[in-house]
Image (cartoon, rainbow, N blue to C red; front, side, top):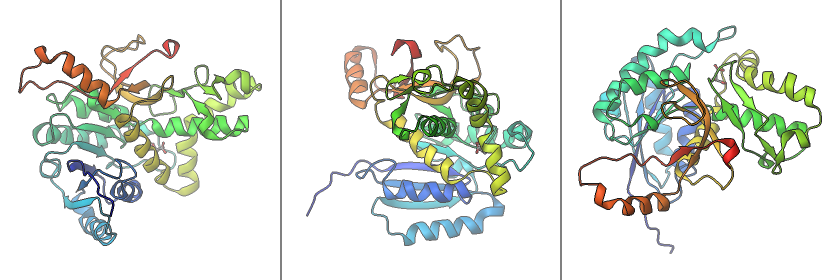
Length: 329
Ligand code: LMR
């Protein structure tokens, strides 16, 4: 029989756990396809009073699936309890927009939620918790959350723009007539809103600049950008609700990008805190830009190098991504 060396159990907190996105995401996490086949997980599910029955149902389904890696499922409505020792916080729960709304219409309603959850993370979560904010307007919600969690490194907070990156890659692949895995270096700049800039100038298809492969520059300049910007809204019109399955997939992609070294020459997009960014973007906001992850091995090596500078008990930020100019690749 195959012997596995199990990694240490990790705690993953998910808000909005009774919602549609989570219903796709949780089963992927429990199956091992997100954190790997040797990584046991504990799922800590945050819901609201209104959703507690549904949350119990979700927990029942997770238990009944007999996932070998799923060692614990707990549910609750108090973020201070649910976020206890969380190493990941996937903040999905928020009021979603309906047809005809912009994501910014949710600023006030959802901002409250993220202020409270930031405080709860600060008080209860692992000091190096990685936070991915999905609930809209996600950039500003991530900022609110971060500002309410001063003990957690600012670079641990992410607003999800991976769905936009995936949408952009899909459109470029379709137009170029190639498989999507041939599209790389796709940056989404800015806000997860209709003002975002999907950067076809720095993106590559089969390693070549997009404009060399897609000769229809009019399409790139006039249609592509708008298509990506408005994809979420168009989908809401069709479904009558916002995207769920593709959002869950993009959360998986985002997590994997953070825990695996980024392939040489490539990058991924994430909404991150702008202080100290190399692009000249105004400071003190959360803005999507190209990011890269370093490998654990590299980080451990760096840690060994500075052993004389790291006293025990001094927390140091080891989040494995950094940013780089597209031109530097
Ligand atoms: C999306 O992009 O599909 C989500 O952010 C939902 C929305 O409001 O568009």
